[in-house]
Length: 299
Ligand SMILES: [Fe+2]
Ligand SMILES: [Fe+2]
Image (cartoon, rainbow, N blue to C red):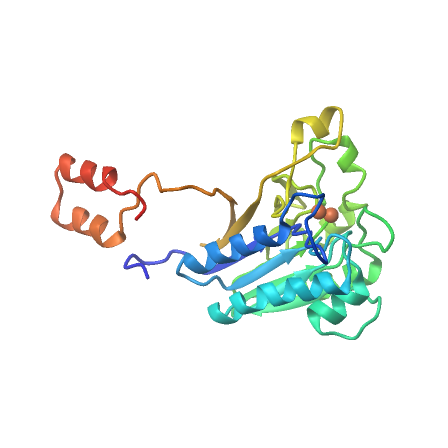
């Protein structure tokens, strides 16, 4: 572990749009399950378990029971070893009944999947914006009332709201037809509350904006990326690539850090905190510092 103090109250790892298949590859050559395993391994190797693993929808590509079994049996061992809770939120590619039964272990029915999970003083509210049979998102009156009721009592560290469909527009007018309908209704509920950040997914590209005075982070996908420029102008174009997000709740704010999956042979440099602390405490020559940063080959 580190020997420098952590400055963060809570850490959430957000993984979105995993699109796991029941078997085989996604779109013939994308190994979406391998991407998920790579991210979970990276988080575990990071050495400091997060406070929550948060999955923001499109967990299965076609919503089959087998895909959810594959998903759960992949995630659970990592979560158990790290001692980290998991929140699964559905997306438009998911199917509620098998999602409930095979991922959550809930009653097998088509009821909405809204959830509240506490990480000590941090409240995380997951909302189900899916509309069975459609790709756009909606929140009905009962869901907005549920959210309003939750937010009536502030949480010690504030609240994170997570939802699959972005409540903000993006660069693609085509994708803007498939986001959350009537986002102003959600804006009215979260405005002036303790919601620190609203997290979404769905577009397969990263975006940031504001809704009702609350920062909005739209995470990209772990499965594959949207070619933003092509999709804004001429064609919906998916391209290989994978990324996830680290959310730090720190000093009363939430900060989203985009983490691309980069499979590299070696690090550019890696100098441990003990060495840096010694440099600071005892002073170090420019040569010493330079050699420490130059000589690491990633082991
Ligand atoms: Fe997706
Ligand atoms: Fe989606």
